[in-house]
Image (cartoon, rainbow, N blue to C red):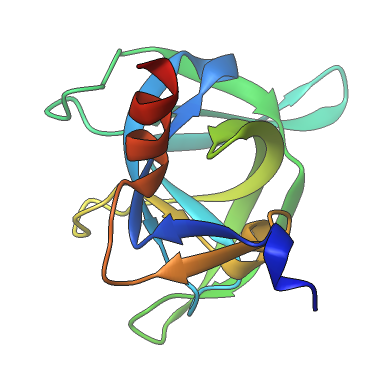
Length: 152
C-alpha cells in the first residue's frame, strides 16, 4: 500500500451532512465498527409511490444541533447489525452526502437509537476505506485544525 496518500484523522472528527442541513457534528471514528450509524428518533417506515421510504428525526431535541426537521428518504437497505453490546438489531439504512476531511463523499448510515452514546454519529470501516484514512487515536478534530490552517 502506498502510504503517501493516506489521510490522517483523529478519533473524533467534525462532519457536515449538507443535504440535511446539519453542520459541525461530532463523529466518533470507530475502526471496530464495519458500518456507520446515526442517532435518530421516531424512525418510521412507510410507502411512497409503492417504494419503501423512512421518516425520522436526527439527533435529540436537547442536542445543540437539533433542528426539529423531519427527514424523509428512500430506504437504501435493511439488514441485521450487531451492536456494541452484542445484541443483533434489524436496522434501516439510508445514503446521504457527508463533508469529511477534504471532500464530499456518499455515506451509508444505519438509523438507530444512540441516545445512550456520547456521540450521535459513528463512522465505521466501510466508509474509512474511501479515504483511505488512517486513525491517530491520540488526536481528535484533526480535520478541523487542517481547515483552520488553510483559511489563515
